Length: 352
Image (cartoon, rainbow, N blue to C red; front, side):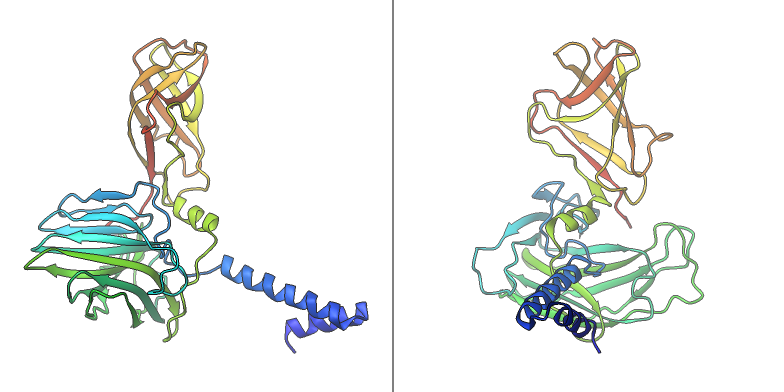
């Protein structure tokens, strides 16, 4: 007997009102369905390209895997490629499920390109039959392949390349579904930063440039593709922040963290990410920042760095150098120095 049937009979017995019990059981089923959606176990993160913490567009340097859209990196060999966030028209009917966004990759002629995701942990799907599915199109016919790798990490076994089927992209949105047998990893040695890499659209573009659009990438066990199930946006954002965190910015005086002045020209700032990151991150920053203590005026920051001896996955210590004007021992805050574009990016992504 199913749990739901037992639950219904229990309510009926205790309430003596079958109509009321039916309503309660319907609510139970709805809650159960919402819970299953919330714990969607698909290891692909941000498969619907909703989250773009780093920005909405970027020109990749040539011969580099570059992250822009959260969890997705793109590569161009021979020339630079361009990545950008695109939005569907409300009410479009080409793709079911009312997706909001898709990834666009503009690839110059005579360029080899790829869009992929490094899934944390080479144990993922090892020894299993898996279905990979996605929607894609191109502004002209192309014949790329999938490019899948088991990467055993630094100090681990040699990488294993498997399942490279070719497919045809056309100018209309099409649904692609691939049945894959992921190799077993028995006898392998797993090192640091191991992963399963899923690469889409790998191949050369010749003759003229091409524009490739992609959305709703998902995987599941078995030989039949499941429909794409979006996670709640807040949960998806937290999953992304394990690998990249961009603190909120956009105001001319955005506050980023607080700390203590060490001297008249230096201070230590502490920051805490929303979730522990995958590893101790690296940090990049751009724009104008300032340190402020007792005075209202900000003292321009000339350099910032992560303290490698005290920074952890969940607590960051930033060393800051200022032009002057600080008072040793005073508390201080780090803020945008009249610059709404001042931005920090903490990166803990997996890289080739």
